[in-house]
Image (tube, rainbow, N blue to C red; front, side, top):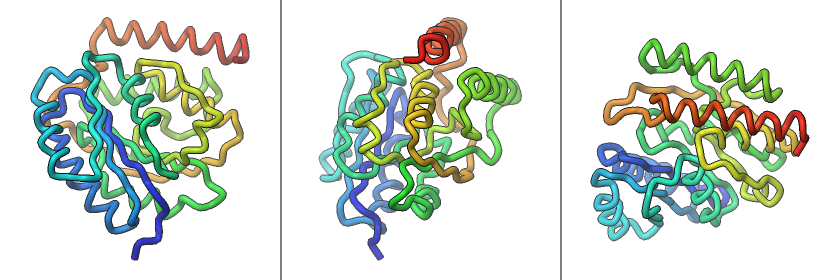
Length: 236
């Protein structure tokens, strides 16, 4: 039974040639079960593999699919902003294109999305990553939650549904991975109602994380310091 209102589902994609096709197929199966009014969007953030060619082929097959190509890699935050800006439906779901989350669990989020709820955020039951990534990820999550006074269980769980009207008030500026901290802080402080749902997290089968290199980590840390100053000192 199709009971869900209009919904957009989008994926940021960067060098996800081995997974993005299955992500599109999987989410389309879920969406057509719950809604007669949906769209799928993929933001290809300047991928250097065959993601562009694969997405252009899928676009011909799926009428509900909208593909947006960044000419060069602009960053994770830029990809999310493009996705939000081009989502036209009442509900916006997004997750990453690397298949570390199962889009079938979108159903779990939809079950708790009600008229008085503005966002449903997933949190990882167990982080399926190498040991060092688990440690760094847990430390990162604890630090940003404390530093920014964020009440979510899992700030960097990119598996969430947000009502589009939220972005009439919440304006995002970050182009890097710190956009998740910026977004969660602004949504929380704007008084929007948030619910949280446990979701599974899976090992990355293809590719590698774009975060774990010195240059990117330094950029994120510097960005977090600047963001903290704006929020906690200047109260922007």
